[in-house]
Image (cartoon, rainbow, N blue to C red):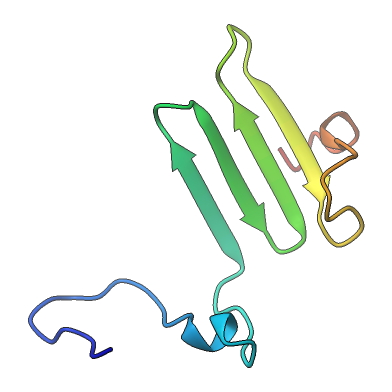
Length: 82
């Protein structure tokens, strides 16, 4: 696939990662779902999920290097991160 030359491309080529012979070019990722009202931010090994579906906003925090299945919410133990 050729990259268009008639516009500015704000992104990085992730094809090497998808093909299994590269590593991430970024250390922070953000996911925003306005209709579902659930957002997520990942920075290095930390993933924070912000759930706005209820009246009270709920935060979840996971250390993906130790808990890739996101079973242990660490938000209350690491308030300085969220």
